[in-house]
Image 1 (cartoon, rainbow, N blue to C red):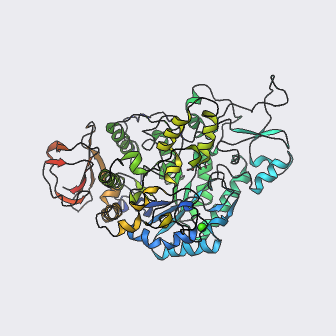
Image 2 (image 1 turned 45 degrees about the horizontal axis):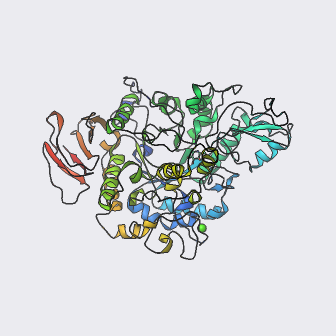
Image 3 (image 1 turned 90 degrees about the horizontal axis):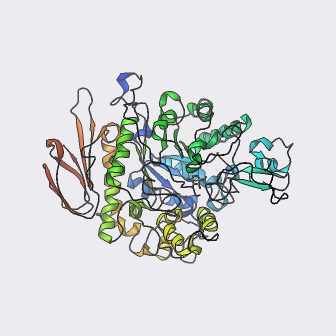
Length: 597
Ligand code: NOJ
Ligand code: CA
């Protein structure tokens, strides 16, 4: 099992969500306009962004150094992956002290300086909120594990084991829950001779949200960061906070996708509404939940603004389309991907809001995963095509660091090159038990493993790609292609992926139609061309109509637009010198264009 449990493909019901009852005057195409709907978000994985002091680990001062780079790119919200004190069993997703900065990343003064510098540039910062679990080194857990009578005992899930007839001295786990990071989700603890629950690594015990004191402590730490001036939170695996009463075994059917059960506990919405009432509603904060296990029809329960829970969630339908269980590939087609975006447009209504993303720190690199890194030309072109898509589809776009440079997967060839705990645990569970040959494991992990996205940012052709000083040893190896793919070279080239992404972001910011406009797929079944419109009709104004044409593949195509539509003014094109307009278009490999019409 891994963090990427196979997710069943979901079929959206053919319903149109009802518009919300908002005061009509302030709405745009029925949507309440808000800054976070209009934002372009850039995710920073701090460990891999910029090492400013030569210890080989990225840090907050390193981020501050590059804020001009981000401002010029045009993104206006930064999502910072965890920056808190942590023993780093899972690179900061295991928090030891929620009010302290990880010492490798710097100090609270560095954080304050970074935040002020972000605000000076008219950007905003959201931080990661990891509160389904803490680190086992958090003082709550240290207290909790110390005795059954400790006041913190009930901050976590402690249960007796089940009798083990074969070996009575070693009881069996309390139930059959698997961990996302392989093996049982229960760890035996000798001090009190009970097991504790950890849906992720053993060093990430799950917090018991049914305990009101846990919830109050979480709300308090949220206020601490909001009072400092952060603009909101990305919430780690947030639907998992309400556990199933009694923690019964999963049935064989439920075992195919345990996230579905874990994400739909009875108190999830009650707790999110309480969090909203007690904390979020008092600030102008943006929230995005990582919504493992939530299907599209369920999504609206969390994001519908009238329910007062979260603003938006990451739904995994698109990003996991090409994945089977663990790191296996699943064959997919372009019409399947289009059907996902189409269903989102149909099922989510005017009181809901969506996200668009195809990469992050848990997935392989955007261009290697969804585009074509087989030649420099296809890499450049397909990376630009993907940025075009992310910035013109419906929902707030989330871009991941390095994708604006077309950074690629790392050429891993050996198990000992991986750092990720998910990979290490899966190796133990598969290769070391003889279930999978090592070569197959390495090949699959090279394709889909999370370390692909975590190799250091490639800033220049200098040693260590400018991520760290030449004498330093980066915590994870720099991709050897940094001499060809790096920011310095792209900043000097007006036709680079960086500059193209900058133009695509500027286009997104310039036209509210690309934010609030309706989405229509003009040719859902075409196997290679993805062509859609975004249209904004506002009373008393001419319609704003945009046409996006993407040739998703290497084969050139002559394509006649359906419905008599003619491409009008060309606004963005990933092949320099393109001028073609009209009804029939000649699209080269991985060609992307945006027109008004
Ligand atoms: C989701 C995070 O994105 C991932 O990196 C982490 O390993 C798990 N949650 C556990 O916190
Ligand atoms: Ca450092």
